[in-house]
Length: 273
Image (cartoon, rainbow, N blue to C red; front, top):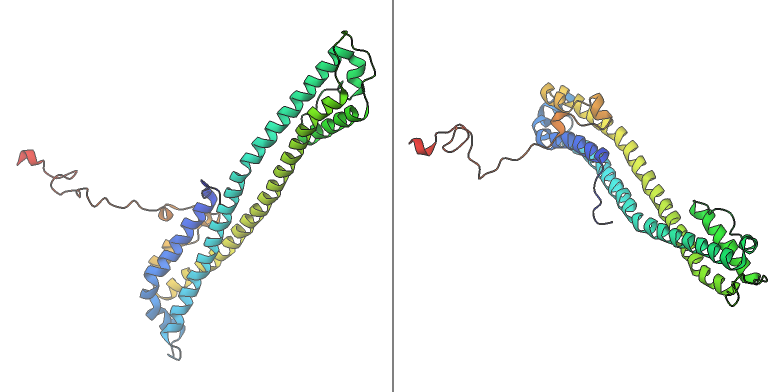
């Protein structure tokens, strides 16, 4: 995984919402086992361990779905970070090939005239897209390598060989070709991680609602409406948006004086003693 990748806001919200439910199950599950078991099995034919396993299994399902959301989201973020360098290399290769083609155009036009420049495919403006520029570079290189310059130079004693110009162009064409392939490969890999991320999100949506509605109902059966209301799958939560209760609460600083204590916000000032 690339260094610096982090959870998206979408994934972080779903993890927080999941934690509200799983934390409730962990803390309050043992408290409702007895009353819930009495409701589910009034004849006492089943052991309470069965109800405990039911609650634990429900929590595990949601934890697994949340874990996949986290893993898939981080994998996609890492893949996007991995795309940065290949794109920079591509842009540099694109710029070097374009600059060299423009230089060749000026050189041939100055030494042999517009007709020679056009004969080697350099009269038209250069394309902006990388794939099209690559094709232009290949075409110019091929013409230079196959067709010697037949015209007399406009300035006596100043000549160039077409094959030498082709040799100059060849590594730049190859560099852009490799850079474009690398970017395409990274794009395909990013699409795969995005697909996994979308699938994990869709699976979480179903699991979250199923598990949370189940806990909501079980809490009600156990006579704990207060617990049910705390985890209620509201419209915001079903959409992956946190409620206020889903936000992590800041931990108290053990070194800070508590309100009302000496030195605390509302405590007496020692100087007044």
